[in-house]
Length: 458
Image 1 (tube, one colour):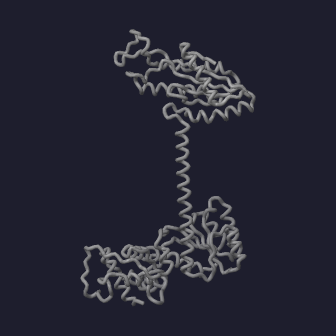
Image 2 (cartoon, rainbow, N blue to C red):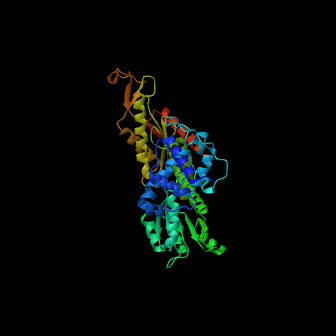
Image 3 (tube, rainbow, N blue to C red):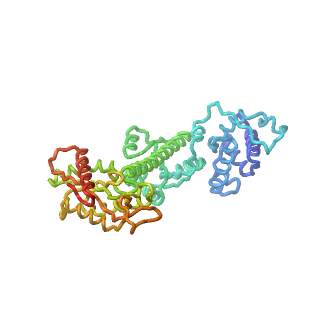
């Protein structure tokens, strides 16, 4: 075992080498109180030094242990200080040995030599605390014995946790309702409301059911532990407890909670990504109507509904006539805008039927709907033609020169926008494949185009 003076000198020298900071008198006393054989609490130290215990616990001590941890590249706390520092001294370069303190020159400009990894076994708590820091976690202690609360509070505050206390179950529920803790340490035997009831109420509330609860009780029967887990407890510690066990179980539950929260966040991001991907698959990016793949998915469901309702199903393929924006010399941006307007117009016209409009091909839109109450298929098709003509959109035409409409910039000619529609009426019980439905529509569409356009063929 190293002497307390040796440990103190080692820490002072190493901290100065690492950060060019000299320890204050209060920091030295915190270190001594932590590594001497008869350790004293921060409350006792505060009384001896004349400082506020709160000031030492929440300000000076956490900053001091953080500084030492940074210098050693290893988490150091009051509980683990002596074991870790003795190991560090044994593995430190010769310039930091106790015999070299008075002779070895100290350079504060050079970076400190790294301490070799500690290979000898050290207390389990120190090993656990080298992992992720949970210093911002808030822990609620529930126990009707103030002595137990003081003991656990001191132990957990030394690790940097935020600690709240409740002397009974009612106060515990009020505390949780006011501000959700990250973890609850709960005694079982308490007056008026025991720990089992408190746990049950917390686990039945959606706002608090995610909080892990560790039961801390002198009751050591298997039945007690089984009941604790059955009401929603996450772990069980038997009194009188050991410091290392409490710290290990607390950190384990906080790690589990952190992993669950991370997994929940990742699942949410994954769901959002899947929804965005599905939307990109279902939606045509240019016209903002359904995509071809979406049309193919909708058709079987619509056919089934039509069969069950014993009503006809109508399929249409509507192609824009005389569309030459994408031809050489055409204006592609205007063409894109034209197709967007056509798609939106078709969708607004058909939406009263709960039908679906999608982009079937570059200039062709597919339409699926069951017979509405006021219009049959032919009447709906004629309404679509009328609505498109009312858009007052011009489409380029390079086939029919007209000197009165000559555009000298693009050398293109324009005429009103119209549609050619190929339609198929699918009656209930008609045995055709889905591909065959579209093939018939395509044939009817070609007939409409060859007929001069702006017409419906079924």
